[in-house]
Image 1 (cartoon, rainbow, N blue to C red):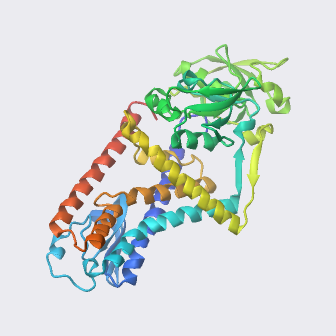
Image 2: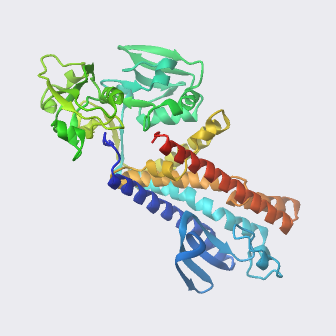
Length: 474
């Protein structure tokens, strides 16, 4: 559970550290996927770099025929293979007669294996990491089809037909049992119908527009950090952040927030929505019940539990509409049902393979939104990627996100775009089928065009991040 307070400098550093470690790990192994088959086929590798060494490197050392190093620009990494037209655009080398140790002198099938090596490593890595996570930590998921207080939905989903406190049991006929199921099905499938339990009665919902498009169309209007759905849970304080408005008001661990400026707040999400109306204001009345965890938790679903003794505190709300506290987790309340499973080595490998496959298919399916109105605005750069990591160092979360990024990296690199592995594979397949190599000039121009396209895409993605930061959407 993330803290309900502004991201501190330490949290930003922790997220950035995890992102840098994950990225470095994936880049090194991806490039090893090219390096190892190249060396097996006696192809000279001139450079092996983590990050780019444009106009200098942080570290470099030559061992044998290869210079190993770390560049200063953390936008990726590369291996420079002799006799290959790549992002280095080394025209001088290509103007010389081919040498036996060069990439261009090797049979097409060997070159194909070298180029597919990075993608293959990333796919295998995704499976192995997911398998390791299942083996070490098992699988523990909150059952959202058996929630005691239901879900809360962002306004666009309410306009589509959902109501707060609904319990979703299926989307487009597919059972929804876990929180991640909702997100993956909504963006991975064209969802135009759902089954919910509302006030104890099962009900069918039909939507004029698929839910993924509904969220896409309203993405900019949603408050920053907003999830499409949230599990309703009582707003009980686990701890307060030092120096925050919550601490100054006297909010303590175990306090349940029941109202904000007279607005009833039965759930944590109700508190979030209510506080958003009082950004930057001081002396906002906060109604609390002390020692809520020592009382009957089942009653906290009511706006004001019967017989509750309420104390009203005066609190300052920051510019982001936050007090500065951590809410208790689902597990601490003891009224939520979890699905738990432990895995042996074989079961973990099977589960990891299944999870990697579903992750890949879901990601590929979600890309359809990029080609719809407003889709390009959802492209995210390094800030977006860094933001998905936990604000506290959590190895289980770190490895799950790293596995996700590994699968995304594999797919993106396989796209048939010159300058990417998939572009080289495309030209090699053409050569193997036609028996003719594309001309070197054509390859150079294609490589340059592909490189410019990728740089433009990166500029767009990181530009979106910058705009969100400047406009306060983060």
